[in-house]
Image (cartoon, rainbow, N blue to C red; front, side, top):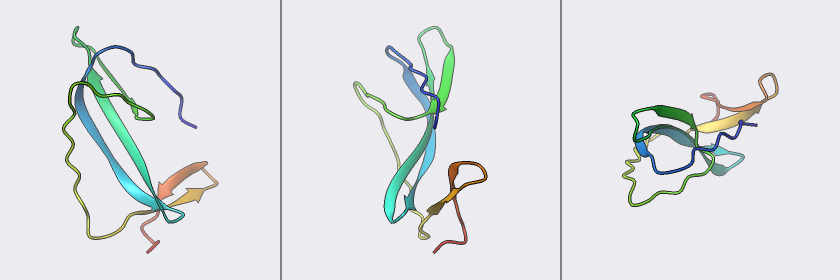
Length: 85
């Protein structure tokens, strides 16, 4: 489980990346984000939940190959498995 680190107040999204992959036949979003505050400091984390105001511009690139994930008991993580089709 990811550690929840609340980031309160108004921040600017500086960078955001991740993937949308299939896990057990359902789409799952995995996203990382870097935000900046008005004093110039930055924070980065996995996105578990976010509220946007006034706007957030997002570009999603669709790959012709579907990304699939599987649970890896050795790491206790759901990982991309390039062997799954």
